[in-house]
Length: 120
Image (cartoon, rainbow, N blue to C red; front, top):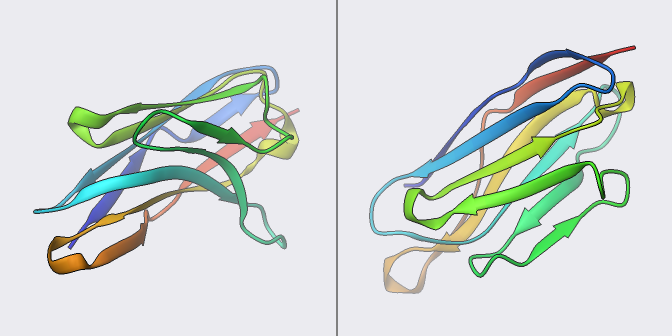
């Protein structure tokens, strides 16, 4: 079983910065793609950024140039550096990981979510 633990959310003023972390733990697994999604009140969950095991990144247009996703494969951990935050970035941020288990099985798991609030 693979579990994700997120940290780093909080309250910040507009134009400020925050850094989120997400660590995957478990046994006998390999992670392929990890990413961050967010869900604001009354809205659907949306992609923020993803990163493959080889370091290929993908960003939502709304965060390009402001957010940077990175990954430490040795620690099965990803980070989301969020700069120039805007009130519209306020949401619960969820970490996601997709990968492989023994015997040809795969997993797709979510973290518990961390609140990011940006005040104007």
